[in-house]
Image 1 (tube, rainbow, N blue to C red):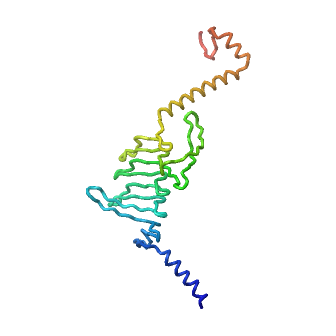
Image 2: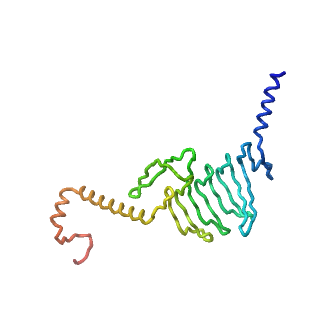
Image 3: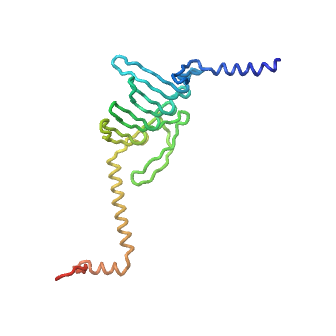
Length: 226
C-alpha cells in the first residue's frame, strides 16, 4: 500500500510546487501575466498603463523568460494604435526596433544585445579602405549597443530623411567612408591602366613612343573631299 501511494504523492507534490503564484486568464482562454514560484515573470504578458499627469497611457504585450523580456514586444496607444515594435534578448533590445506616430513610421533602430554571462562577442568589422569584412572578438561593457543602420522617416510621406550607421555604439562617419572608397576606386583605375599598358605588344609600345609628338592623320572611313 505504501509503495502504491508514494509515486502518487510525489506527483501531487511536484504539480503543486510548479503551479504559478499568480496568473490571469485572457479573453481567448490563454494564461497571461504568470509569475512563477521564484517571483519571476514567465510567458505571455499584457500590461496596461493608464494616462497620468499629462503623460499618455499605453498597452504592451510580449513574452517574459525568467523575468526578462524576450522576442518581439508591441506597444499600443490606449486607442489601439501601434506605437512601437521592439525585439529583445536577455531582457535588452536586440535587432530591429521600429517606432510609429499616428501618421506612420518615424524611425528604425538596430541594436545588438550581449549575453550577460558571456560578455565577449564576435563582430563583423568592415574595412573602410576595402570591401573586406573582418571578424573581431571584443569584450562588450554594455548590455546592448547600437549596431547597424538607423533610418529616420517623414511619417506622412514615408520617405527616409536621415540615415546613420553604427558599429558597436560608434557612429560611422559617412563622409570619411565615402572619401576612402573614392580614393580606392581611383587607385584601382590607375592600377588597371598600368596593367593595360604593360599588356600591349612591344611593337605597339615602340610605335606609340616614336610617334608620340607627331600629328598622325588617321582614316576613319569618312567620304568626301578632304
